[in-house]
Each structure stands twice: as structure tokens, then as C-alpha cells.
Length: 92
Image (cartoon, rainbow, N blue to C red):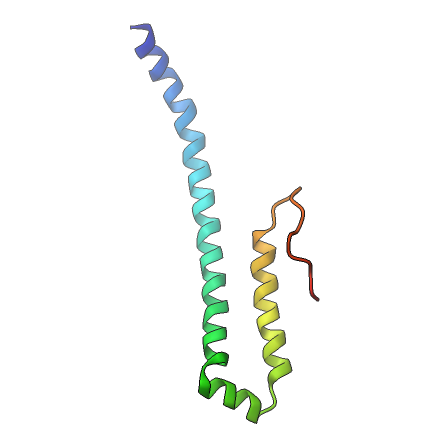
């Protein structure tokens, strides 16, 4: 009887914060996936055979390097947590 009562009292205390944390981590994972998708599509666009030839023909190497660097910085900025040292130094 006491154990059941304790479980009924403690369950909402545990479940409500875990639901909030779950929603927050879902949003973060979704944003991370979108940024990875942008990086991937950019790489696929530029690194395909026709993309490489086009970039070289139009001498856009520097532009593409900067564009990908922007995606990379945005992605890494989303991965940083307060108080955790950066493992990847800023190349900019």
C-alpha cells in the first residue's frame, strides 16, 4: 500500500521533467539533422564530377570553400555546450 502510494506521488515528479527534456532534445536533434542535410547536399552538389568540373571551369573554388565553411561553422556552433571546451579549433 505504501509503495503504491509512493509510486503514484513520485511518478508525475519524474515524468513531467523527462517529457520536457525529451521535447528539447528532439528539437535540437532535428536542427542538427537539418544542418547536416544542408552540408551533405552542398558537398554532393560540388563534389560530383559535373560539379567539380563546373566549379573549376568557373574558378569558384574559394567561393565554395567559404560557403561550406559557413555551413560547418553553423553546425559546430549548434553542437557546442556551455562549459565544454571545443575539440575542433575555429579555422576562421
